[in-house]
Length: 320
Ligand SMILES: Nc1nc2c(ncn2[C@@H]2O[C@H](COP(=O)(O)OP(=O)(O)OP(=O)(O)O)[C@@H](O)[C@H]2O)c(=O)[nH]1
Ligand SMILES: [Mg+2]
Image (tube, rainbow, N blue to C red):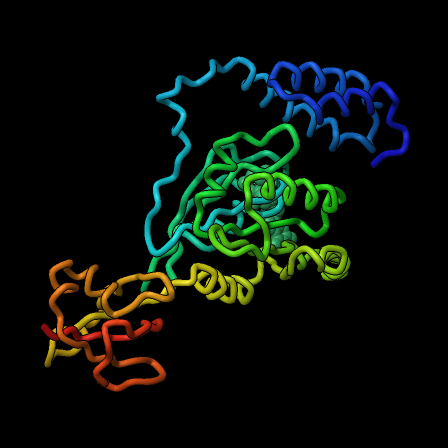
């Protein structure tokens, strides 16, 4: 941060951070823009303030949504699971969505690019996982609907830019607002949370990641990432599948083979043969006598009980 910021500027910035309405944000940002010293060293900050100001002005002109419009930003679940991308501005969330799915979000060098949630489908082997890109989490800019989307997800991927000078504040802020909604790293239940330090390909990035990881190691376990590394992207897909804690199960008719390109049933880890029978048909679940299972690692057509716990890749033949 430049050393010559005036007390007027710092006061205005404090007012901005404390602002709770768009009108208060506009007033504080206008004051920040007026009082920031105008020279080369603050050009980026000035551009950032202008961008925030234009967004805050738009927000202050918007009418409050009627109750019936409140769900406007909900994202309908599709595929084997929904993973929402969260994190501070400019950390690479949209880049990840673009790399892992066929979606075309806007990606830019400056912060506050993404304004609305954007879903995309990530193919992983024979299932599709839904990823949802989100507007950034930043003080003064977090809308209740954003937190609702994060809270409802099956899993949340937190993406930080390890080279951002604000990284420590960003990390504290993100953890705090998520915790207020009961979303915490390491806590049981949904949504599960995974934390990545992105842009480790930038010179100095690996060192920055290591320091950050150590600083927060008592609170979460972060992993390094580069959205520009194809190897990291391949590994990430597998981690995202694991994060969902699901199993893929194939069914087949007695005496037949599994159809080629069969679409698996997707169930929560811990589901039983009875659960997959229910998905095929609820009457089948009530009346089937036994099942045979062919597994990836064990079982080769053995009879199993109704309470048999399914494993990823199991092929099940249900006998009535
Ligand atoms: N070097 C490098 N640049 C990256 C990486 N990931 C993203 N970027 C760049 O970082 C900038 C910001 O990326 P975005 O994906 O737009 O960031 P975002 O998190 O969606 O930003 P907001 O929408 O403002 O929240 C872009 O210029 C990207 O090309 C990475 O792993 N390495
Ligand atoms: Mg974005």
